[in-house]
Length: 387
Ligand SMILES: *Cc1c(COP(=O)(O)O)cnc(C)c1O
Image (tube, rainbow, N blue to C red; front, side, top):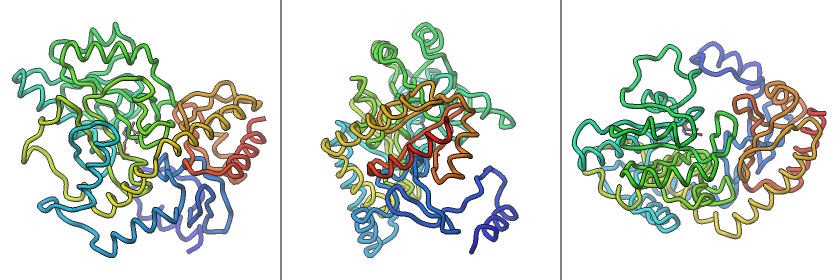
């Protein structure tokens, strides 16, 4: 099908939830993609921080197809080796005690919120159930995670929301007011992705951790976007020297297949018991085989390379005319630009570069395997567009 045919079908039959750019991506290799009309793009978006090894990575494909040759799905009524191995791998790499698999970031967060309430209920009885979130956060599109998303723009039309959720500014006096004796958890993104690639202040995060620990309020770290090597560490909380009680991740976890995970550390290890939570597809063996490939290749050496690429991009971007500031951590980069972010994205697209927006900033989240040549190509387009 050509682009116009695809567009017509989508516009006729698709729920009108997306305002799409006028391009249909047909394939690619690493950070170079091709559309249905044969035009090539450098990919600084990685399918929104998902394709950590870019398009069609050879080793990743072998892991996925080998599992497809065995079986494509096993219900959670039975054991399955890829799930078991991935659980072990995630725990070994993070120090987590137990893992629950979901299919998306929102579901991983739902799981975390439910676990936090159950933990508190078992220890303190009913009424201590408030989930405290931050202003300008993003935690997903289900009603619970939407309620937890501290951005009013997402809240129109969908009330009534889930009770027992309240958002606070990212400072300790706001947290002290909001996280009162009815709070069971505080959820943070180390780098707020959707609202502008804003790094939480390290001092605030450390004080928050101490505050939570003192009151036995669980610290949930939403690493749906920041996780899986994105910031140059396996998980971004490592930059802060803090210890989450629960960590959620998804996006890049399986390198392009739908998989979410909720990791339970120390005291939350036994929050759930049989029947408390579940998922039909969660922990699908093909997705888990993909994630085993991803996590086992995110070695310290690989992560050092990611940090090097990030420094390279950041240095070049800081020196680019039209860039007011460069935010974010590692390969999760925000740009404050003189030109409106929306225009930058549209002009880059026309010139063969895919970049994203995050609120009023330009967001760059390339495949972690992007080559120097691909970075340079993308940078030269950005330079032209921003000047
Ligand atoms: C993308 C994102 C989510 C939602 O993930 P889905 O897979 O779209 O449900 C949640 N939290 C953060 C921080 C995200 O970036």
